[in-house]
Image 1: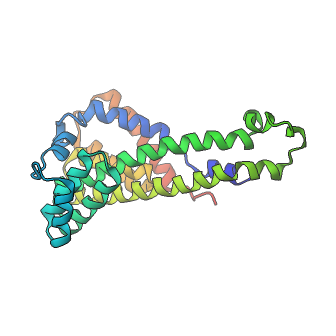
Image 2: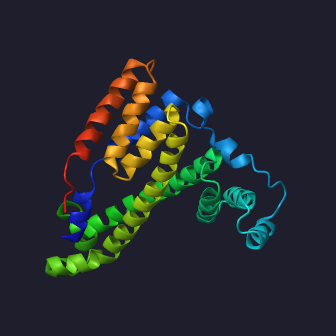
Image 3: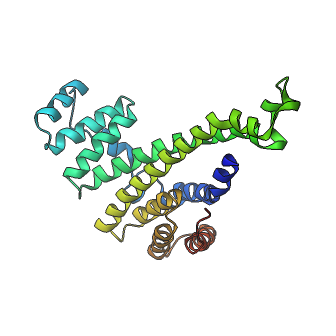
Length: 253
């Protein structure tokens, strides 16, 4: 059945991704400024000042190749909670300034934020679909008065809106992580000895199921952090082995 194929087709990366994210906060101080990553600096250092979103939109229309205007617009959108619009503006900015690390960090961070939100919605949609498709949890179907007469095909029809939603969310999730990975790869290319850059690349690549890239980046991070505490290193080495295994395993159709 469709939902089961979708569920089985997802490699179990999120367990060790959670480990990686948790270890990232401990080992790297992500979000606190350690290693050059401080999301507050990225989003709050805008030179836009008191310029309104409408003023900045006007600037970008009048001067579409003016990179600072797109940067300031992205930050203004972010401050206003318009994540999708902020991502679009950041992508325009990094297209004009491909080597600007603050712009790449801003774009990647917002893509990751949106992906995490999408993952939450995906989990909810999968749970709803399971009510109709998983025998042990088919509570929604069983609660119907006609439940005894429900055929397998009818159960699938009831679940179809959820499976469609799942497919849409999976596409959005993959797209955001692929784009975030591209941003992280550019950052690593600009500063290959930056350990936090390598770690963040490993996270995004793994989430986007680009396992070879993730494994390479995680290995580079471990090589760049010889003084990492042994417990953290051991956990990340286990994650590395799993990533390397996924990289050499053919995808399930």
